Amino acid sequence: MLKEFKEFIARGNVIDLAVGVIIGAAFTSIVKSLTTNLINPLIGLFIGKIDLSGLQFTVGSAHFKYGSFLDACINFIIIAFVVFLLTKSLNRFMKKDPDAEPAPTNEEVYLEQIRDLLKDQQK
Image 1 (cartoon, helix red, strand yellow):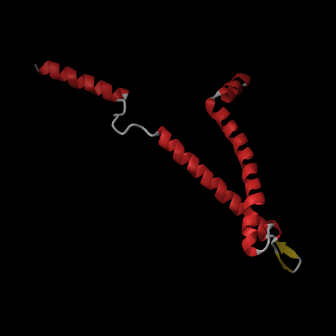
Image 2 (tube, helix red, strand yellow; image 1 turned 180 degrees about the vertical axis):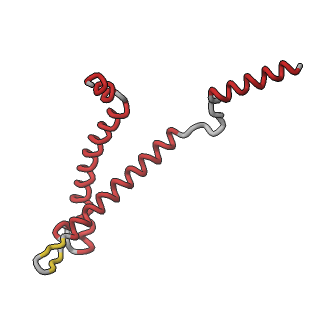
């Protein structure tokens, strides 16, 4: 069981996933700082409040903090946009040559060999 676990951890996919999670967490903190320190003050110029997380309304004894929700939405939009840009640029770099034909599968190679043998037998 320990050997299987070592093989599982040593696989590239698991390591790539771990690196992605770590980088994603670091990137999330950068975006949160961007939102809190740059975007919210810019929005605050228009609505009169710099700290959106303090926006709330109260019904009875319940407090609905819609400002924190707005912060989370702004963070999500920024992260989604950056992921979109990264994916788009990676796809551009990984783009296959449109003129290159895909390599034939083993089945196609065998079928071509059979076809050639049948042609030779008919001659």
